[in-house]
Length: 161
Image 1 (cartoon, one colour):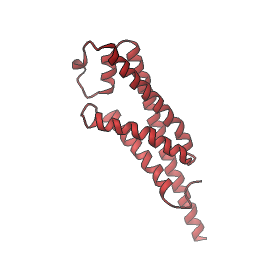
Image 2 (tube, helix red, strand yellow):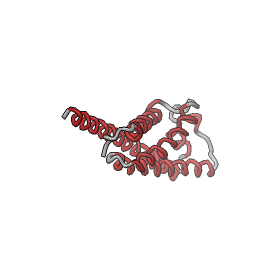
Image 3 (cartoon, helix red, strand yellow):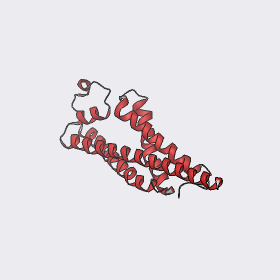
Image 4 (cartoon, rainbow, N blue to C red):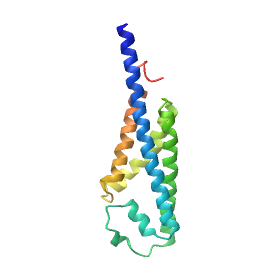
């Protein structure tokens, strides 16, 4: 009887951790989908400085005003496309993370986690971004990965099912 209570409590905790991870991935995915759409809109409007300023938000927008070559706009446009699809993949994966699907847990972690690793290395450490929203999103994806990996690798047979 006591053992069953512990197993049920453990299962509930593991399911709750997956649900929290899932909600974090939903938020992360939506923010990145929005960032991709907004950045594409800047590029399509020919406002490369606006696109760069939207990404590197800690930089004074006045120093970003210059004549960018069209190739720079294409590169930022590709970045926007990557933000969009990475956000979409993690958003979709989140619904399967909720159910404890290991493939979705790894897909979200690889896609969102590696995207944010690059962001951290080049944008955060470079000092080009503010805490909100970018750095906070890195913390959100890190928490989502930690929670879902804890459930996945806990070795607990009563893990979420």
